[in-house]
Each structure stands twice: as structure tokens, then as C-alpha cells.
Image (cartoon, rainbow, N blue to C red; front, side, top):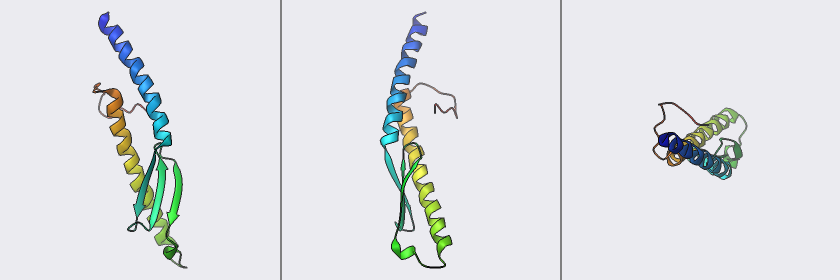
Length: 106
């Protein structure tokens, strides 16, 4: 019975930490870039795009496809950084609690 109470207390603590982490992720801003910094994308910790910056030198007629590709690459870079940050924070929140492989809490 003590083990069950201990497990319930841990679950409550994890839930509080998860809520705090989600609030922090919403405020987090992560930049991804491509084309040696010519295109920059900023995402929040939830993966929502906040801004896109494109160097004016890329705005030439007939080069739209290049710009589109660079925007996608910058977004993918930022998204990978967001996911790495989330994984790192999840390890802090769960405090070594063993979770099955592939299990995501959010």
C-alpha cells in the first residue's frame, strides 16, 4: 500500500511539472535557419511558427522555388531543435521514471 501511495504522489508531482513545462514551452522561442542564415524561422516550444525572416537578396524574380525550399529547410531545422528541447525537458520532468520506449506524454 505504501508503494501505491508513493506512486500516486510521484504521478501528482509529474503532472505539476508537466503543466509548468508546457507553459515554459509556449514561451520558448527557437530559431532554425538555412542558406547560411539567409532564411530564419522562429518557432515556439510547441512547434508553432512565430516569424519568418528572408534576406532581401533572395527576393529575385524567378527564384521563388529556392526561397520556398530554404523556408522549409529552416522550419525543419527549428522543429528538430524544438523536439530535442522537449525531450531534454521531459527527462527532467520524469526524473528517471522508466517509460516504455516510444511513449510520449504529450
